[in-house]
Image 1: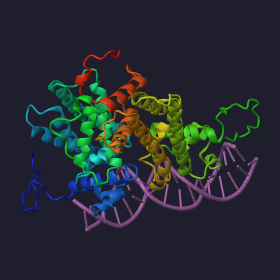
Image 2: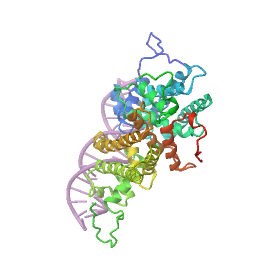
Image 3: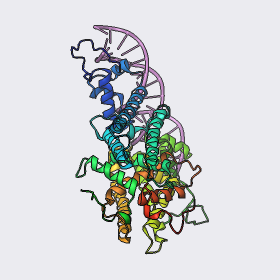
Image 4: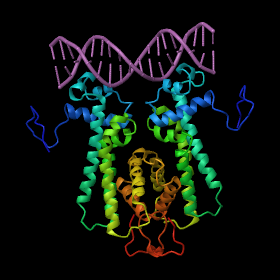
Length: 220
Length: 220
DNA sequence: GTCTATATGCCGATAGAC
DNA sequence: GTCTATCGGCATATAGAC
């Protein structure tokens, strides 16, 4: 990672204080997430960042350039979170552990402190076609990451070979992203939601006759 | 249902030919679905309907009134489709049949000839807050219909009582709606997708040891 | 029921001073 | 790097003729 030298900051922190370009991006991500793409004007972003609309053009060429960067960072962040979560697991982790960890990481990316990933999920369908098209490669790469994860689960053994892993992925990702529309940090935690989704994805709603009274009961 | 008398049509059909208000709604639903809420101007709707923007105000009070009606009809139509599909089933239909039929009906509502349901799914998150809020009761009623269906599946027996039916529903509906973003009528049919989703929801990805070589093998 | 003409306002973007 | 001022365009909505 290259670090942009700050002219008058004596602390070369790993997390540079948000000023200038970074402040614009953070503000834009938050407003896009809250109000959508068309509902967020450059005047809104500038006002929330403590400047005037014309000043934004010193940092970016256009509104599309801003939203494109926000979208790109959104995928980058959630992808890094999922990668880091999987890296902490042992190489022989079972399917249940793999899915629960990856799903939890994805949910954390959307409901965490930063707004880039949630903004991406929310406004991707609203941006102009050419902006959306520019983001397709990054999104495809992230989807391929999940496809690889499901394939790894299948290699790990135990998966029903009649199931269509592609369809499973196409169902899973919107199911995760949909939490943005209903999860408000209520009674159930994000971790519990991730666990339930992983459980549902692997075992389904039906009761398994052979697992009537397993040796280690799941505590909840 | 009240039938609006058409002035110069000799056929009082159950499906009145789209003219005037109905034509405006059909056109608006199609454009909203294709271009989103903010991406569809009243000029666009009027031009596609063969009139001028000012003429729209003879049929509706505002753009919000148009989009509100489109959203309402969208829920009404998909709800009627699901209800009709369930009404065709025997009272003792098993969970697999219930879910497959309901999911198929919901998918047909989104990918069928009419654009209201797909427009609803697409633009619901884009409309002004007060328009969205007015649609919440209709959406809630539809969600309750699915909650009742899952409860019926549980009463039918065989469902794991450890599973959270509310979470299952909150995962299922976005998984269905997400097909709008990837299904293009390719190799797999909508019916096959519905079947696979029902199968996944009930059985999960894991292989069931007790069902290794069942009496009737699923043909595919 | 549809039209022309227009009111009114916000949008993204630019010019140029400091 | 931020500002004031403004341009040109498109948005919703209205007035009033036909």
